[in-house]
Image 1 (cartoon, rainbow, N blue to C red):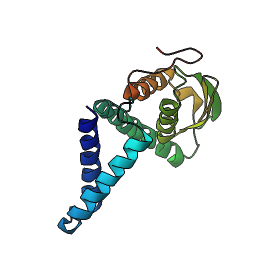
Image 2 (image 1 turned 180 degrees about the horizontal axis):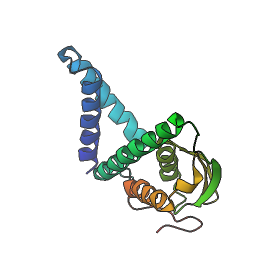
Image 3 (image 1 turned 90 degrees about the horizontal axis):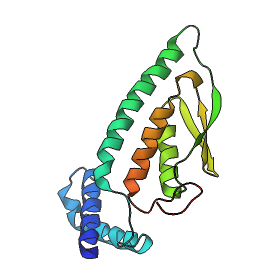
Length: 165
């Protein structure tokens, strides 16, 4: 299985390289070497037998981010163009379902990507959020984003204030 994962990483990194160089055939050899070296380095930094991100769960996450980004961008631009800015900024603290640092960092990034919200801190099983319009904050959307972020990492997620689930 680790050999399969190594070649999967190499292939994924080579495809990324191929996109970045705009499919230039002159870069195939260099890209293959760079992808293999990057896969080797990534295997040293994050061993192949450790659980990681589940690529298949990225699709619903990206779909959700696209919809939220569009809605949030429209909302922020609407507020900016109104003669009377309809903003009601506030800080709120939400409870995190896990102490998994990478999942919570990803969740903070997801929240911060959506216009009108910013994740400011994550500690002690909670996350502080700054909201541009507090009445429009939906805790259910936050919970859904949290499930998406935790789902990417699969098993081995530690509950906030507890042990492995």
